[in-house]
Image: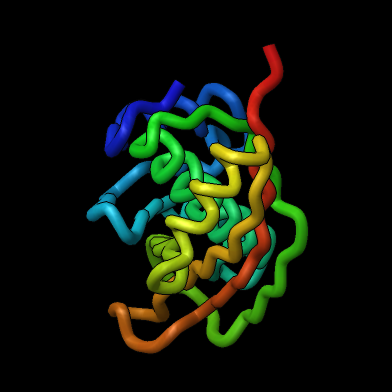
Length: 154
């Protein structure tokens, strides 16, 4: 179980529960209550051209968004299974160094999501995630994804 704001618990959950996160060497970097940042080194995520593999970018964006949903639920004292339902992804520029994904939701999105989860046992929310380009300039990859949370049975 992930505790509210506990980045180490989130990192453990990712690395122990999702073998791909371990293979990518995903690390929880920062959480400020609104945005979650996850990172991964280039070396285990490199493609044949020496930059970041598109599948790794996609995975890190999805993991950051999934992690944010779980942290927000933990803050609200809620436990649910979280699934990505639909995602749109744009690759805008190559990434030549460490991969850092930041996930966030629109202002005001969380109260409705959490209320629906409490009241109905299920809820949906759109979470955005971005990976910055070289030196933090611009955006190298961007995703918007709809996540579904369903109250854990039992």
